[in-house]
Image 1 (cartoon, rainbow, N blue to C red):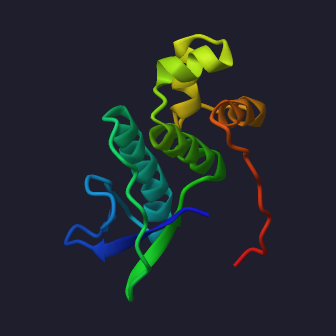
Image 2: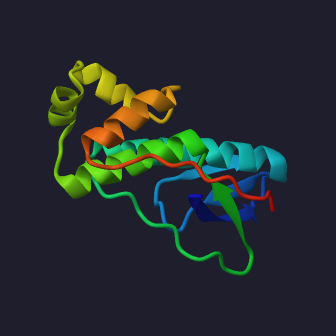
Image 3: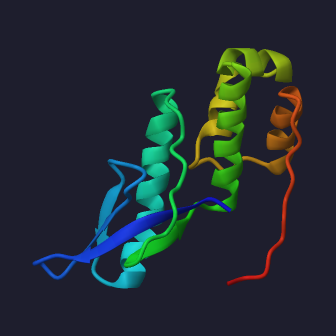
Length: 142
């Protein structure tokens, strides 16, 4: 489970400002805590997609500190982030992964797009092409 700490800070306009210490640039707000949390997930995913586009490493989440709230990356997005990290570790670019999967480059782009609803079978094939296996773990809800 990929969970990032976030700072929720009320501002002078009545909104709640949300920032992520580990992901600079991921900033959003909401007018209630629930609204701010919903926007926080979107802001986090948007910034993580920008990191992928820039071909930079995905920042690891730090420990939750007092006064911070945790923001969980959706499961499908987490699988895609893990695929990106596996590609970087194996020094396999998108074109090479497309070749290994016998598909076109736009299909690999969609596998790394956190807004695209990729199928698990496609992600499993991509991990296999990297010598990895995708596994799902079920945990009790906190």
